[in-house]
Image (cartoon, rainbow, N blue to C red; front, top):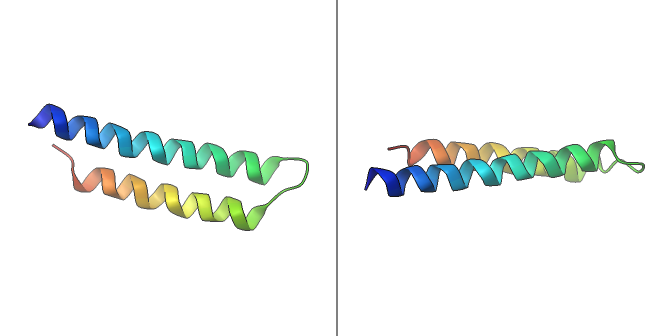
Length: 56
């Protein structure tokens, strides 16, 4: 059971990292999309918290 929860935590944190990567690319590209980048930052925070909620 702890291994399954650990996998769920890993998945949530991976999703959060991907959102942060997307935000960085959106904010630093040739045409910055700061509103969309900030949305992805917010989503990353929520996903990281969800990962903490299911911690083994």
